[in-house]
Length: 459
Image 1 (spheres, rainbow, N blue to C red):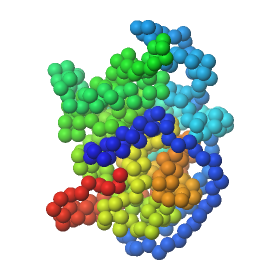
Image 2 (cartoon, helix red, strand yellow; image 1 turned 60 degrees about the vertical axis):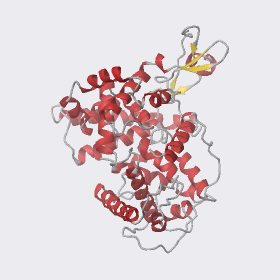
Image 3 (cartoon, rainbow, N blue to C red; image 1 turned 180 degrees about the vertical axis):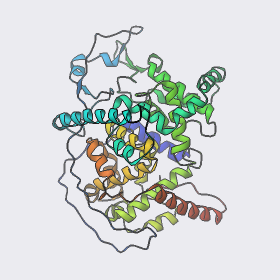
Image 4 (tube, one colour; image 1 turned 45 degrees about the horizontal axis):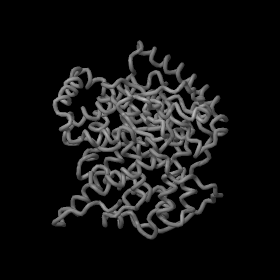
């Protein structure tokens, strides 16, 4: 990672983990439509209007049960303190706090029954679907896509991810590799160059989640983070360290901890390792995590190109009085890429609500990485009205940062993502590859004309 991006990414991750992001402002939003003659683009198309109203959230509501405090060397884990407050705290089925700072609890309740009924129907349909192939995973087909877009049942999710991503096949080819890597770690630690960085990030990985919490509070009220007391965090540490040995040219980059954390909600430790392997090597673009970060930069340029062509009103707010090709030629993309790059590095973890992220991943592992562009475009389109009220690009950046957190109705969002009338309806893997090729060639030509390569100034 470049130093500038790493610092920006760490700061944004810290704010997200600590819930320090700006609270939503309650304002009346009106649509502002701007028309502008834009320079020619090889992909120019007209914008498509979408309904941006969202029903309430589908996430399950669970009152957290609090046991008697458990002392560890005279200290009590913070999750056992403030019992009266914790008894009223509500979490989803995965141990995350419900995002009630963005959506009211009443908003959750209004949709809960409907979504649960839908999940029950989906579970039955998936069982019938699998029974047609003697309970073998079906080959990729339009029907499989349709089922995945409506959500993979929780009891099947981890197995489906493993199968369709290719992680299961890789694991079967080298069944002892993970244990071998762990044995090597015993001889290298603490000489592994990433060990300290990974250790620092452990307690920052979902610190408020009941499965990953490691905060310990002493009698004097001081709080200490002790990852060693949490088995899930130790699994996370081992997976991340093993990956640094498996892919030494990539090593460890912040955001991998969040990805593996989600994996561990559904699969075993060794399966989480192989999911990370296929995700980084087979799904993410090449050079996403190396020092040049060329893959990340190119994909952000692709996203900005799509916004410029498909949602010009948003482009006019994030890059006033500039065309995309001018920004791209100057290697100076809009500041909003600070936010949208975070979407792609984390696959929307800590961006969209938990259940919504999982629904995105269901499609990602079956359909491919282009799903990220479809979701990103849809999220931006659904934020269009609010972005059109932005006074400057930084205000638009703040809206892009906050609005996705309200998109708790995962089923409605995914319907918009894959709607035939949606903003991303005609977006395909081939289209993404063509755009990448054009932008990569233009970048190479600029580098060839310069004696030294400038760092990306889009952060």
